[in-house]
Length: 113
Image (tube, rainbow, N blue to C red; front, top):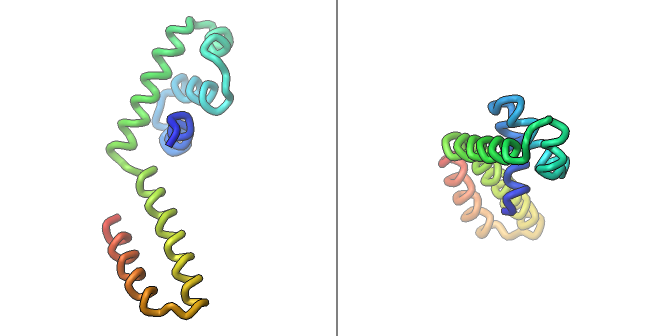
C-alpha cells in the first residue's frame, strides 16, 4: 500500500490520539496536499519544524497501528466479506462442497481476530 494512502487511513483511525498540531499538519500535508512551505507559511513556523512534526506524527501513527492493529484487522474483515460474497455467488451456482470447505476456512480466520 502506498505510504500516503496508508498515512491517510491511519490518520482517520488514530488521528484523535495525536496532538492537535500533529493531526492538523498531517491532514494538511496528506489530505489537503499542501507542501511543507505552504504549511510552514500558514503556521508561521519553519519548513524544518513542519517536517519534524510530520515525522513525529507519522511515527506515532505507525506505533499505534503496531500495538492496536486496527487497520490490519479491518483489512482482514474486508477480505473476509469478499470471501463470503464469493461463497454466496457459489451458492447461486450450486457449488455446495466447495462452499463448505471455504466456510470452515472463513470461520477459522474470524476466530483468529
